[in-house]
Length: 389
Image 1 (cartoon, rainbow, N blue to C red):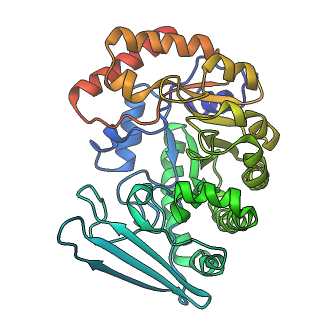
Image 2: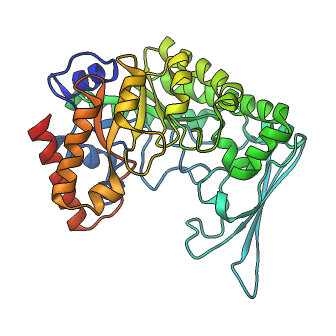
């Protein structure tokens, strides 16, 4: 099998020549490369089955939503952006940002801590916001009309830029016969960035109709991005959902607030001939019935160490041959910190528990440490996979 054939077969739970190994995120290697093309080629040289993304994982991604690669968000002309710094004598400065729209103003206030990655800038959506924001832009239902302006129609130049990058990615994938993925989608998880994690959950309890409306606004924006990204022709669309598991949402809340839009997005992907992957690294078993109902093709991020409700054997039993499972080895605890023997044992455990079909091996989530020792440990994992696959 070619790498693309192997990955497609694994994603569709069909027979493969051997279980593929494809790192879901590999920022340590990306940091050693000068380009996305070099990053892909080096993974091929390592014997892996890399996915070629149409939207880069590089640090040059759009600063308004760095964790959501794809078609860049460019604010409509009727949205005025203001940013300024409030200097604080006895603590970190506070960064302020306003989004002035015809339907009201959204405001964000963020502590510019030493590890804040955007000097003088506040993105709209980013993980770094959640523990540092003193104020999130969406606080009450009246803010949703302003949010509709902020998440306006796709900008023609942003779509053109994406298509250009996508054609380059597809050309590389065709040369190397690799799987191609579209940019990353998002559902109510984006509400964490817009409202705050705890605040969003409180709103779901106290004002469920507001959260439903928020989810619909995000879905409409995401669906438009999806359709444009899928138009270029890809094998796989991935939706990030790190914050949509039962660590945060009860199954009934998931069914009410998240499942409806997920079903529609899976349909959009399938109508365009793409498979649908869903990133969930913790709190996963409780939502598996809903993922099956939605028609999700693969759960990305099966973490046997740091994940909760991610027991590999239980997950394989729950999904059978109806859904692929991608992951199996913890990246930080096992690969970056474990002994060679522990790494090899983890690979064997993953392959035994997940089985030969519908499985893609990967560290979960990400190999971040850039040291030579960690890269040597990565080679230990790859060598174990070669011997056991």
